[in-house]
Length: 293
Image (tube, rainbow, N blue to C red; front, top):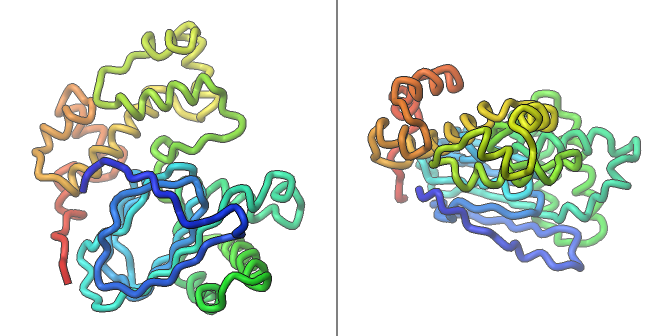
């Protein structure tokens, strides 16, 4: 799978509250993509599909339900090891403008607001929650886009927001989520790192980009992101390395250097610390041959 990310423009007009599409398929071929719209994606009979959200790679069970609210958080479902002849997929997309800040700040929307913040990293829901909202998702998919459907969407968001066992997917660094509190300086540096993670990145270089001293910027970056600059860079590089381990035939050594690490032993040590397994075991665990059914 290529690291090239398609910028998807969903068929959602300014006059629509949301866009919903139901598909029955035997194969997933849509490429890695991103978009600014919020997305709820439900899959039935998809056991063995490989789901990628940012730097998170997982193989799905028979049912899968995720919410993505992160602007430009890349994601894709790959055929992976799925053998199902008929996979059902329901995708609901809506603009962030549908739920403006002035609405999300109301008490009645408190749980939804918190959920949407978490979903900037992608949010996966357990089977118990999926079964609880199954009929609601099914009705939204089958009954058009009338006013009642909009109310059902709000009810769906509320039900999902009450789930206490949802899981964040992408790491905080890889999610590219920009909060209102994040300054333009931090955003500029994060964009530069994401575009140049293969190159040598130094504190001196990055602090000079935003007109701050290295010491001041180091403190400023951690205050704004909750991570040190070096940890942020490592997370970005490990995210791309994880994808390459699964989707390419490059050697571990080649991946190490192509992702900006300059020492193989150091790469192996950091990878094991962050991912709880060596790069070799990670590749063996996640690599599956693609199936064409």
